[in-house]
Each structure stands twice: as structure tokens, then as C-alpha cells.
Image (cartoon, rainbow, N blue to C red; front, side):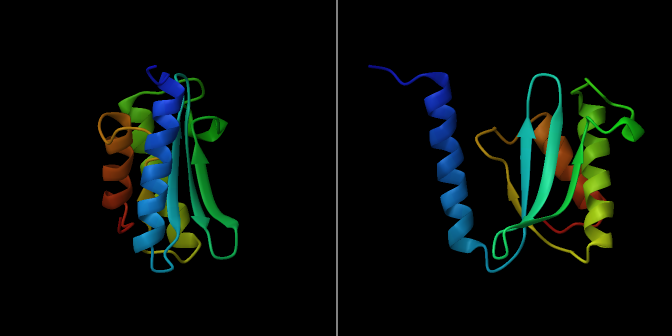
Length: 119
């Protein structure tokens, strides 16, 4: 029997996460979640189990509430890079979850790199 879309997504997500654990070397993880309407990103320190910084389109001051576009993804990427600098983080591992690395996910990663975060 064929796997459902959700099962395939979970399989990709766990494959990406396990590879990150192998090569992490103590760096924080930049975890991305994308839905049809919003996008959020967190900078997570897995050693201590804390979130160091986060950004989302649900934040009213960013002006992208309910919008999940390339422009919103780029703005979120630039915002997380800025907040990571404030938290004292210069490099991180990019955790795309089960999402493919193109479109909005790629735009977010590129904007974070341009903002000074080494991914």
C-alpha cells in the first residue's frame, strides 16, 4: 500500500533531522515551518533545549500576517539573521524539515545568508 503524503513528509523530516544530528558539531539549528498561510523559523540550541531566536509572519510588526509569499520569506530570513546576531549566533545548521529546498524555503535561507548568518 502506498504511503500517504503525511507519512512521506514525516519520513523526509526525520531523514533530514538525523543527518543534521550527525554533522551538527554543537551549532544551533535553524528550523523552518511552512503552512499554506504562514511561515515561521526558530533558532534552536539542541544541547540545552532552548529557542534562541524566532521570527514568523504572524508577528504584526513585520506586516505579513496571513501572507506566505517569497517577499514574506525573505523578510523572515533577514529578521532571523538580525535576531541571531543579537543572540550572539553567527552560524547555524539549516533544518528544512520535510520541505523541499526551493521556493519560499530557499528564499528564506538566502535572505538569512545575506543577513550575515552562516548556514
